[in-house]
Image 1: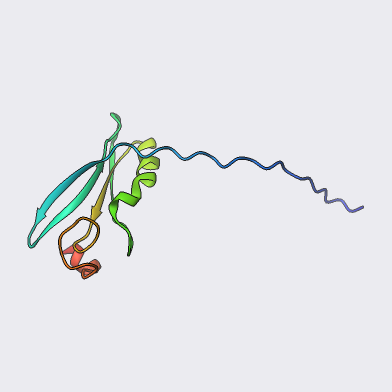
Image 2: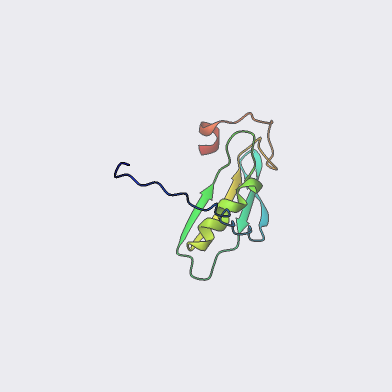
Length: 102
């Protein structure tokens, strides 16, 4: 037998994910659009903030689990639906990154 020993590890249950905190929904008016913003309540000790922008085919509401992870680390999280995505105004899917920055 060689010097490498193999052992079988028991099946471990998946680590439970924290439940998303209750979200607050806002409408922010920008030139030509009303944007949907989701705010996840910040812990009292929050010293940092993050703005989360969903990818194509998603909306800010899908970012709750990530917001929970950030919140657990003391980060206040906001989700932004760009124009044409989620609950924001605008033609569906018609705005790319340059339009978001404008």
